Amino acid sequence: MGRAFEFRKARKMKRWSAMAKTFTRIGKDIVMAVKEGGANTETNARLRAVIQNAKAANMPKDNVERAIKKASDKDTANYKEVLFEGYAPHGIALVVETATDNNNRSVANVRAAFSKCDGNMGTSGSVVFMFDHTCNFRIKSEDLKMDLEEFELELIDFEVEEVFEDEDGILIYAPFEQFGAIQKYLEENNLEILSSGFERIPTTTTKLNEEQQADVEKLLERLEEDDDVQNVYHSMEL
Image 1: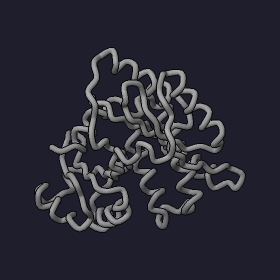
Image 2: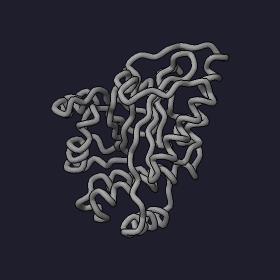
Image 3: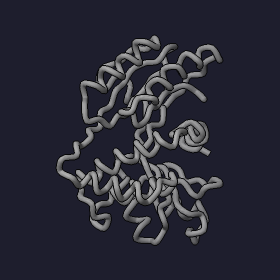
Image 4: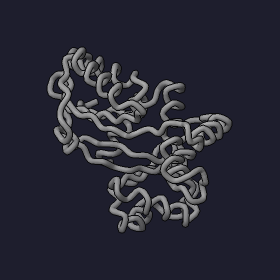
């Protein structure tokens, strides 16, 4: 198995552990998708993807429909995706993805988190190059009518980096830019997409002792508690 498999395995129990936080994040994704491409799932591929993720997270259908209706209201503020970069204690690189309707608030909160947890907030581009920006899809294992190696060859034109199977289905990892093309291929070939998304995988990781890890975790937890924060990626070996 490759880097994506190990990354996914390590993060599986950490990401979006609180259901309420998960629903808040998906709600923001719905707003951004509707504002960008409208409320029709037939013509809005991004919205289709978010709804798939909502189902995977067991978000009630009523919640999804309310979020779409609210997002369609002209008075509903849109969220802007803003990236923050910096270092946690012990030289661990961090990339913080936010979705915010108040950039000043987000900047202040993220800066305060870095400062209070002995980290250093960096400038744009200071650490993001240390992470590969990837897209991923999960499909049903039973939908696939060929073996994984053959399937991976089918996807070679999409620059797919890894295809592997776990207890929840088949996962596909590819460069960020290939998201739309792969989504279209899977839909056209009747391969049900259970979930999809984007991740930033560190190109190299740093091993820390338990005390050092605790220092980094303190900052990670503070950032992830912020309502504007969607994801936090780091270069610490898990």
